[in-house]
Length: 401
Image (cartoon, rainbow, N blue to C red):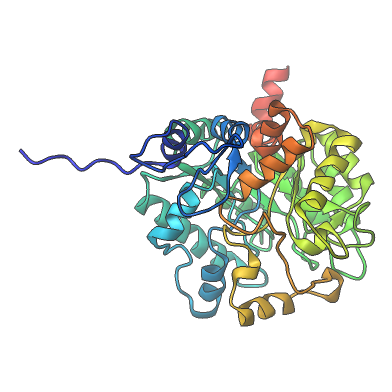
């Protein structure tokens, strides 16, 4: 009788085995200073508390490409951005992140067809690797991926040009899309983007888009929206509105991709959550720019509106932007206006590698955040907001009546 092949260790099994000191997966030797070397391929060490928090928490990164280089190349030659090799897959599985949100912006008259193609590519990736990955389409899926150790993939986009009619929202909801950013950096039929010269707010069509998204249970995201469009969305929606990946303008004065205190307070009143990015020029307008300055943005949101309204949306793939070949990095920067304020580096040290969640957790603990508050920031807050949003509006109204 032939022996059955053993199923490969999934993400959670690998980490649990490491913490238990099992040699069958990854060694986690206890070091004299009370820290653990969790991954054999790295010299980085982490505290037992950090490892325990990540292992016991649902970690959601609300802007997290699986591989930026392959996405860029796909845009050039039409290749599939989700043909990942074993090393790339292993980096995702052992990253400490339970749910990735590989949201991209498709802009212009062909956006509808491009989004359809992209969803098909994601579906193919998840189907091919179903033992390790799963689609996230309802709130129960979060619990399933956490318990099973699979990595969840959340479907959404950083622009809504593909909503060419209101019925398109129903179509893409049916295909699995659960989050949509109303605009990217420029104006569309819905509203105005962050880098436009003048912001007229949501259009009449934009108001109807938000209403339809509310009705279906699709999350409204305003990360790249202009200031007036951002504020209009908070008024138009009857559900929590998300800022999946942005930073605080109070700490980076004048930066168009950062949100004002007024916007953050309005977001919190809807019950929404703001994910903080690790993009260097959004975090600080001068050097040095460090992980501590990233945590300053979390502190600012917490002091302004409370711990329940902040999360993470790192806005990077496992390897960071600066790992891209130089000509690709320069090409990427060239697509944005000067108001972005790019400097030589885009990433922040500590958030530029596949195990960034461990460094981030260590930094939060050093700031005296409790384990419960760290877990909320790492994913609990976004799960709570999405559970309110994804419930169809009519069903929610019936339960309240």
